[in-house]
Amino acid sequence: PGTPPISGPSLAALNTLSEEEVEFILSLPKAELHAHLNGCVGMEVLLELADEFVEGIGFEQSSLKRLESFSIDDIGEFFKAFGVIYGLVSTREALGRVTRGVLGGFLGEVGEESESESECTYLELRTTPRRLGRSSAEEYLETVLEEVERYPKEKAGLIVSVDRRMGVATESESESEGGITVEEVINLAIELKKQGRRVVGVDVCGDPRSGDMQLLKPFMGKVREVGLGLTVHIAEIQGSVSGDTQHLLSFTPDRIGHGTFLSEKEKEIVLERRIPVEVCLSSNIICKTVPDLASHHIRYYLERDHPIVLCTDDTLPFRTSLTAEYALLLAKPPFGLGLSREEVRRVAEWSLEVRFGGR
Ligand code: 6MZ
Image (cartoon, rainbow, N blue to C red; front, side, top):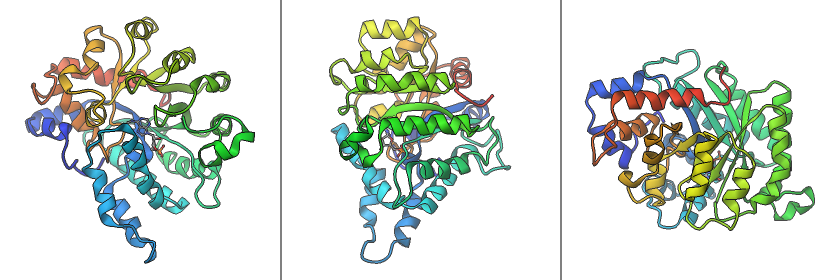
């Protein structure tokens, strides 16, 4: 957000719209509910951070620049790409700075947010706590929350992400991602919520080829008890780990992310329970989990008047913005889906209806 996307399907769609149509998109009250903090960092901030590194451990700009133009043939490459960002966002100061930039990009600067110019009227930003040097996972979340809470609660909330690669028990520290366990992350989210901090939900994300979701089940009840929303990345790739989708659905999530490869039976459950689907069009097209816009599963849900939320996922690698994602709805085929203004307005309304916080 904030900077124009370099290239990609959504920019192509945006370029076909008249100024008046772009104004229409900007004027719609809407929420961004599926945006990963470290995937939405602006390139300028990353270049600044790279410049600040002491010589010798400096980053090659080329490895950074690749983030904006890479094409993904294997979804694993996508997750590896975050290593460059994590290498740069490696202090609390840097984390605070990038969080401020991402919030500002979506919402406008604190106190200067203009409804008609900002990307969205409400943002649920998500992030996975990491240890930064000697800082703990708790300090990570504190740093992000300090920035989120500079905005009123009607504008911004935080979803705490659990990475599928994390271990589940404290004893398995060595096996877990960065030594942080699922239990630790969920307990932190709950504790912060109880303290009245701006945590609105929990997410399960990360490389869909890893982890055993069955092991997460015992932790999910606690999430609901304290009134946190639950969203899960689900069926993001074909042939997910056996039983994965059923396990995730058994958590009775309040929203689901992607849902690209749900079976007919699983889709029926989603429809029956009216579980809102977070749809990330550019992300799916660039990750090649969906061949093109015309065959995207968004159509299935739109035809059934089932709530979907249009989201960016990761603005940096997917070269997009929320406005550009909405352009994919409004633009005429083949650039977009050619929805009517009323249909686009309905999608924007859903996004506000299904938010976890903000009220
Ligand atoms: C699954 C994704 C994702 O948490 O460090 N992430 N997980 N599917 C996706 N769509 C293709 N996009 C991003 O933000 C970056 C992290 O979010 C998850 C990955 O685990 C990634 O490392 P945070 O702020």
